[in-house]
Image (cartoon, rainbow, N blue to C red; front, side, top):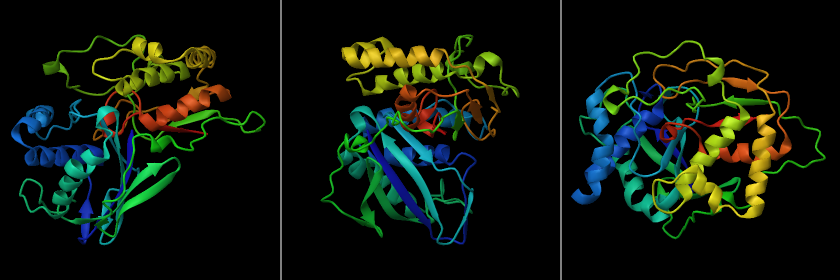
Length: 327
């Protein structure tokens, strides 16, 4: 995986972002990437973007993504920005597209185009497109962010590797600590499977006419559900395509498998004490957002939960869904 922190600085008196900025970023940057690629390479991008044309201006967000495994995570905050204010967001490239060269050759030029565009498709009053400067871009190395674009200047000598994001990260909690972890707060909406999830509707019927106002008891995710969603998410790191959670298990060595099995066993014994999960804004993908409280989260679960929060779990991770903090 490659993690990039991107800082755009507004150069217009006022811009407004969409209710879920990641959705707007995905559609606009994805279209610009497709426009810049050769015909054969652009084909999967255009196919992936086609549902936007079908939905038009519908408030329902289609379950689509770029034809690469990528997460666009816009930091929670305000939607209106004035002259000189920064907009911060993360781009995460996973699997075979965790390639710094791909970022420099394909994604960064699309951002540069988006910063200065006057294309009438995007150049509209109060919209961000054509009204910002790319001030800085950083790559994660463990808990640190290393800049390779500063004040708009690109350092071509910098080489980000797909493993550096994890360098020096210490997930384990010291056993002697007196700290108690007992709640989990979703900072973006999530959509996780539940035991009573109905079969998926055909693609042409996939739009939801409305969202339920109250979450049902079986839809409240347990710690076990979150860990199982993490295992499903790890399939993107296996070579090739169309992998299953069973193949993730098979890729682990004996010690890793035993550790994960023990974590799942512990998670299954921890009930949800209470929660305040509610439906997110209609402009956001995902089903629910809010906080969950537990009697206590065992220390062995913390590394797996922190990994799940970094990778995002569930559906529509492309738009940043499925990440949380624990405390």
